[in-house]
Length: 178
Image 1 (tube, rainbow, N blue to C red):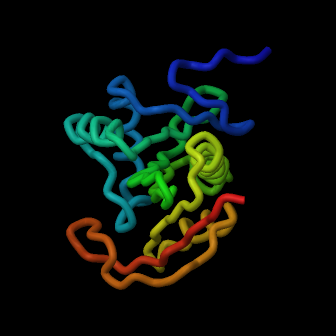
Image 2 (tube, rainbow, N blue to C red):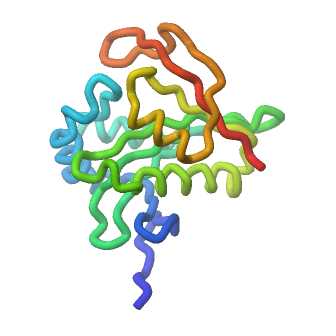
């Protein structure tokens, strides 16, 4: 039997669904972040408190931003997050992707399904031309993920983003619409 979609849920792939985070997600999100601290460091520093999570939701509801929770279709467990940020339309039609998995959900292809679904959303519904992901050079799982989704390496940016209080080098990876 086909399951009905929850509010804000988008059909994404056979094993996952994408949905917009809400304040009601705070307990599960924060528990997943806490359980994932070893997986995330030093690559990403997601919201760790309810206040930070609510600010994140508010910021991602602004113009040019979209947040997606990647969830298991069966049971709804949080798999990870994909953020589409700094979307610019007009003649540029581009945006940036940031993402992270939660512990216990990694290395199963679920984040690949989630990232591919967000790319389809960006190129289809938003009609973007280009998406860019900036990844720290030693983050092998993240580099493997974008490669598996068809992104191509475009360059290297020294001290590009400040993460965890330090300016960190990043590789620039991008994908273009067909």
